[in-house]
Image (cartoon, rainbow, N blue to C red):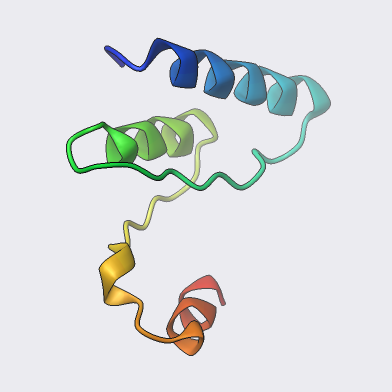
Length: 72
């Protein structure tokens, strides 16, 4: 990923720690304006952890039950 060096560095440390401990990557909440690379970074994390990626636009969540249904 190009740009957002401090964010990329933090994610690299977290990924390396997860691999070293043989654990899953902890949850991450990516927040910011459109076009910052949140989805791209989430895809990279999913690829590195060899897992699926499901993108959800926050504006589509109207009620707490909507988020609960997504997480379950």
